Length: 111
Length: 111
Image (cartoon, rainbow over all chains, first blue to last red; front, side, top):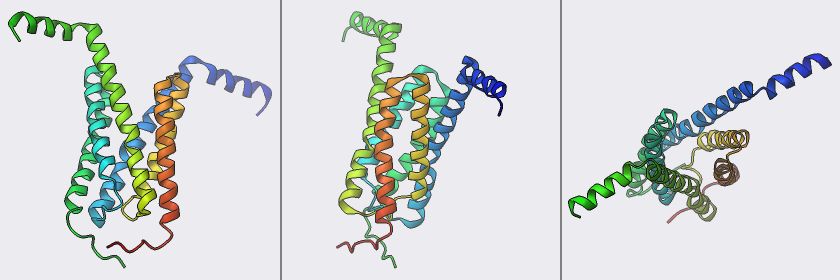
């Protein structure tokens, strides 16, 4: 990259519109990752029924917190906040329910 | 509550300033709950070393997502986003590290 090209690239990054688009893209990717990360946990728990290592306190507090994020999104009228937290709430509530249900029975013997 | 009092209370709630304060309070409580919920999980994992029920994929994707939320907060210059995600990142990375470390050794026999 010569001096002129790199100056153009840098001024492009410093441009408020480019920075704002980059910021929004990072926010959208971040929201997708933290929301969808609960899919493999829900699947793992459903498949193994192994809930002894999962904290009941964590999922109780987390589910309540996500429900409040949802209320916050509704008051704000911000649909990305509403959608992300609706999905996370469904997944967290599913894991919490499995923890409560599978936690009652003795854990299956693992090889 | 008589009719006059309830009318005052309702008009108070409809007042944009009151609604904005209520919204912010809900947002702050939601952020504290979802952030601090990882403390009991980290403590549970540290104490029991029982990581078989914890999804490696979940904590890998979640940690990456929280790191991107932190970058988003820095670009935005929004300190509540920065603080909440710094704390969550530290807790999620700790749980991920324990999953990787304790996951290698056979799980201790539980009574």
